Image 1 (cartoon, rainbow, N blue to C red):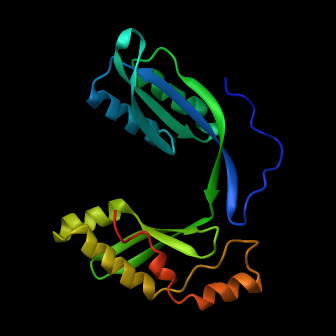
Image 2: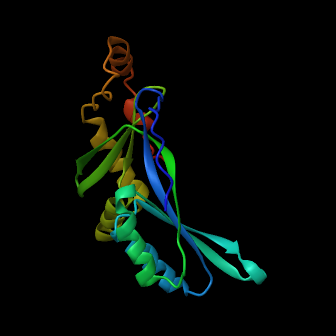
Length: 195
């Protein structure tokens, strides 16, 4: 059973939020790569916000995989059932951890080739950074037989025509507002340059 979440209030920088995530993981040495990929997808579909794997050396020198799922604590039982149904593991470890996240907003931009979802994240030093949804870029690249970099350029152009999102709650002071308005190169802070 997971230990209790910290009950004391957690203070961070403006625009940062702390949240509790449950970590579920198992070391597996008797499943094929295809079966592990199926398990990872099933964990995501059951509510895990992230699933990742790491190569590990287990007892007796056997090579294995440490599969980790991050999820909201209220999804614990549902996601645990996926482990029992789709993995060869006889046990799953659980623990609560604190995760810091930046304030974010979702939007969709229109490009000449189709819509692309964007995640805006507030940076602690001030200003927004935008990142396009990789699946949307890949879909447009396949449909139009174009390189991803070309699509990133279209997204940059579309973003430059949009108004900037408002700062997160608590950061709408005159100081932050005037600082952001004085930066005409906000869109240049995009994470679109190179992957």
